[in-house]
Image 1: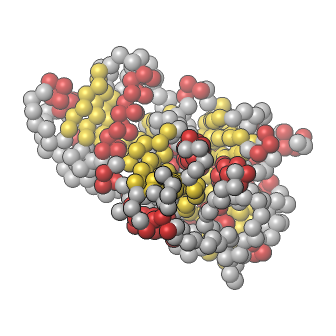
Image 2: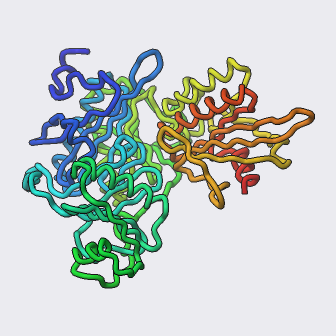
Image 3: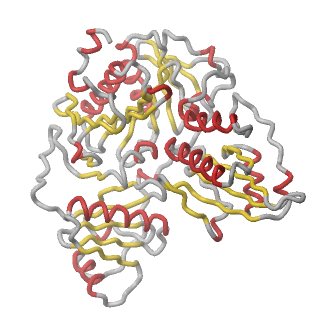
Length: 488
């Protein structure tokens, strides 16, 4: 590392030397390390930089850098976070994938770093905001969304904030209340209970009471009554009102732009790897997501300018806040970026599939083939004859480090943000039992779930003495669609 790189930002020296999460908050336009006790607590008036370090091949590290922008953070501080993120990447060797995270629109990957959730709080230490008074407890109302990762949002402590469609958590000094809207999802209710346990242990020393209030239950229960007393007494609540947070950007055909001297210009022709020159920066606009690609021989100032140009591009296009921005360095492109190109020569496996690659290598040694699907690696997808007959189907959804059984009407429903394991037990010829075991990877699933699905499927295969035919399915494959038909 050169002396010039070392001098970039003293606060980043020593970063990325251990597996885990490191956080800095922007204070007076400088990154300041955040103590572990504050991990997961984000103030809406501040901007943060988050480094996630995971293990790679041969003892190397894989880096993901996220900069989180509170809804009330100043434009100057948001710009500082974006620029300092580029400097952190330079210190780490210029190979990190960088992500912009907007409060209320965080990616699943980012939220998966914080168990069970991040806690967004009003206020902050940025100029124009008073410093939060931690010693005085403040009753707060949150809306809690998400079936797999939890999205918490602080809303005004008012009856008008409640509705019939969501799950709410009211954190008061003596009790924590969970209000279940009549139309709320059972999975979101379960996730809210995990958050309540976290709040109870972290902020109430594990001693406060927990109360569940069901929308529409008018029984005169003391605990339920105390909930409504905090809102001035029971009264009907209104319907959910759509907000800017509910806007979901649509994926559009990818368009490539070059970035020169901070100016964004369209690139004509088909999307191919040969369009990307290693001494330039580019912007790939996919509608719901924007990628900034950085050539490996570009200078640090060019990389900073490209980051700023992407922000200005989004502003000029009036894109929703939920539009994700990912910055990639040449040679460390993700599968989601490569998949937009008509021509991308196959080389090393995408970083996001590294865990599956290790499992595939292990299975290859055992003589078991692993199938997948991508634009750059077409697969001959034949429907296994075994799926045409009868048999026993078992399905599990990946939930953290474990698998949760899928039962009833949910069997056959595959959500693109999740990963699953499917075991099909059948009789073939004179053998007692045969097995078909697959792990299904949703296109929007996070890398941690993808790797865990592969690991648990391999473990299950070993427990069955290696007899199952083990197959990887991506949710874009024909075989996956056929399996879904069979399950239904």
